[in-house]
Length: 161
Image (cartoon, rainbow, N blue to C red; front, side, top):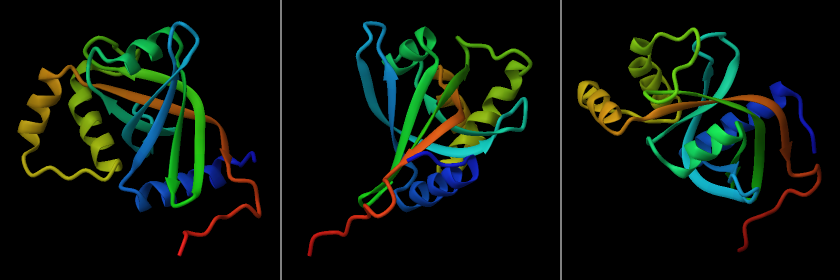
C-alpha cells in the first residue's frame, strides 16, 4: 500500500520509537542479489538541504557501504509487532571515504551525533564517541524518501495469546 510522505514518516516515527529505532536495511549487492542488515535509524533534516531524511551510521568498509556506492538505492523497514512500514529512496553517503558536495568535512562529527540521537542514542562522553566514529571511519547514510509501503488496510495482526 502506498502512502504519502507525511503518512509514511508518521509510521516510521511510530514504529521506530516502539522498537528502539531498529530497522532492516535492504540494499542490492553488485551481483544483483538483495543484501540485508539491521541498523539503528532515525528521522532528521538533511544536513545540506533541510529536507526530511531517514538516516543511519555505517562502519567504514562494510558490505552495506560497498553496495550503496555501487547502487545508491535502498529500503529501510521499521516494524512494531506485526505492523511495518518500508521507506524506499536514494541514499547519499558522507564520511571519510565519501565526501558529500556542499557539506564541509568538519561538519561530519556533529552529523553523526545528530543521527545517533535521532535513532534514540544517548552517549555520556561525546568526545569519546567522536574519536570512535573517526577511528572506525563511520559514514552517515542519508535516505531521501521517495516511496513508502506498509501493510494493506485491514490486515492488522494481533499478537498470539
